[in-house]
Image 1 (cartoon, rainbow, N blue to C red):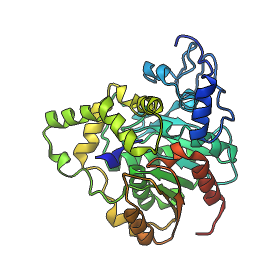
Image 2 (cartoon, helix red, strand yellow; image 1 turned 120 degrees about the vertical axis):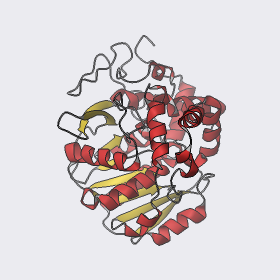
Image 3 (cartoon, rainbow, N blue to C red; image 1 turned 180 degrees about the vertical axis):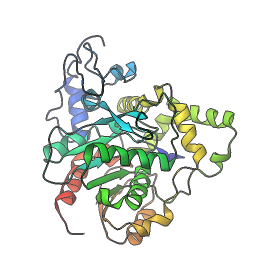
Image 4 (cartoon, one colour; image 1 turned 90 degrees about the vertical axis):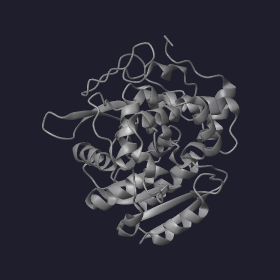
Length: 354
């Protein structure tokens, strides 16, 4: 179960100096930390930010309680884009963070862990932009902050189709697809089915050897909904954070718990999660050896969720892969050690060698 971890009425005020120092240490520096948008923000998708807070109106109001300045800044940049998933009139307003400029290098597309959101990239995203990369942070269908009022199916196949339609509509170039934890399964599944859309893969502490959701797919609906309700509980999320991160303070643990469960407060979250669970989830074991792209495998030395042995197995089974270790980081190094992760991704994006 733990391998499925993610991960005011006035304008936001700069956090206290001590808080900035703590967050900057964890998130790779304070450059650009306190920059934020002001006033009303609108775009072609109709997503409008609140004049008071600067956050998009589609985010739960609890976003205003989050203290992490990196999470606040990235949340303020989120928007929804229409993605066609069926007939010409069938669209999903899909949440993401768009790049501010295009790069000559193929774009980097950032996925996230199970039951998480693109806010997972709050610390590393600014560093990737500073490195000159065209970075997209995309919410996988069924998680994150997309509008799922119509309750679409959220199976692995549905998630793949949605991501392909997103890529086809907005990215339209071969991408460096980045998947942490279960997001690595999402990335492998997508790369095998749509190889033209993917130039390279980056897999971070990859959760790729689970055989789907197993017996959970057979649960009666009332038990499935009861189990899913437990997933968003604060005690379970706190425990998951204690496992996922390496030595963060209690106050930071509580705040990052609020970041990680923010999307669970949307009205369709339970239905989308049960839909995924009942569908059988991801089983990509047989697809690993079919990956044709060059792959960077990133492994944290202090990961207490995915074993080093599993990462070595993945490295050996992938036809063309290199492996790099991140010291002093837990399961989510792109949050704990974003400078190292951003440097590895940027170098891999620019380097054709495998």
